[in-house]
Length: 546
Image (cartoon, rainbow, N blue to C red; front, side, top):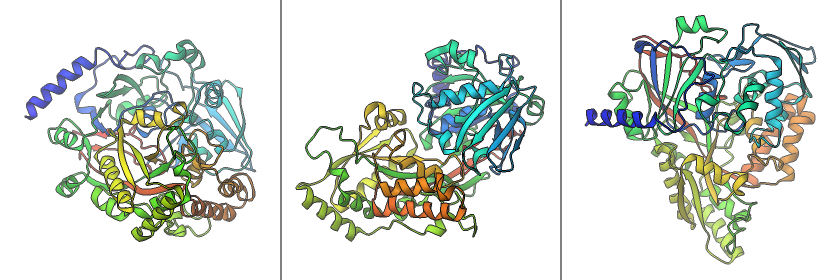
């Protein structure tokens, strides 16, 4: 059976390489020498790439792919600390408001063009341009960026409106990456659709992208640190898109993968296998409740705006039991801010410990709220639960568990499973947030509560899919970011603690479910995969010793 499976996968690869998104390497600049098989690493991608345009992508897999082949001013080391990448050096003014970056003289794009300060100016302008329609258009404001300019070809200056401790960390996030203006303009609406429609300035170039099967990277000889990469790191990194954990485990056991994500019974069965790890990630899964977008045009379509409906959902879910069923290192979500994201600036206490549990499982209270909602609305309450079918077995299990507990409270819940790309499209502004309730997740872009709090302010049209609108919540977040909290770290922290209570406990605008675990086997021959709880995981420092 394994031989038959391998033969089928080879045939699929041959068919896939003739079309799809694998469009050659025009402008890629990859090595013409075949990669050494002993220096090739093949890793599992549990979800597909949504977009290689780093202004359009919003998902972790796309960001991981982008960080393989595109570099920002800084990158993150294994501990999540920012270190220079495209920037050879930087200075910060005494007041913390002005950063001046010196771009490396040997920083080049894969077509030979130098990386310049204008590449950052162009990219940041494009990010906030309404025509780009980026879901991250707000992130410059989050970083308190007031202005930026190219002082000369190799000097990039950024002015902030307030000191921002996580600003340097953010410059390693894909939204802040540069773009070659001439190349992007020439490609127009074809930019980033295939490997030939991309340009690279990172340690690797993307050499193949067959949607639904794999995407591959080889060393970039034009990277400023190419000599170290050639001596130290993997020559080729292949990402295989395998969402089914059983299929992925078979591939690992057959020697076709160097890592595999585990779930359920697989965890207990493999916990003694060499290379097994069980870690807690920064991804927070929660229910997004569509209370502000009446798009379904059916009677009673505004029922999700009813406070008792949402409170019933909040108390109905046994989060500890869901974590037990998932059995992959996930833990119950006691709030919207994950464990390990940020610490109290004065006491050093983790946010989750400082805040305590702001949600609780209380089935009796859930039923009381449901009956109160039913009396107010005059009818039973039925809705669809939207979730991703290609986001791993754990998500399917979690959706089924959420359905079970909500129905115990009295709701009728119809599961609406869609591929991730379609799920995100339905929830987005282009489709007028066409969903009822959605099991979704957010991975922190940087290590600060603000990365979650910004999602739910009323003015964030890109991410506040449920249409939550609370003057009290908005005021707390605004004060933390631009009021007294911007200059007083203790006030800022207290504002975020209070904002979480307002969002989750008082208004039940979102329903936290679980913080994702990461049970995995990594081949003992492979090292250097860097897991960041408050940023994008990095595969750009993989080493292999076979």
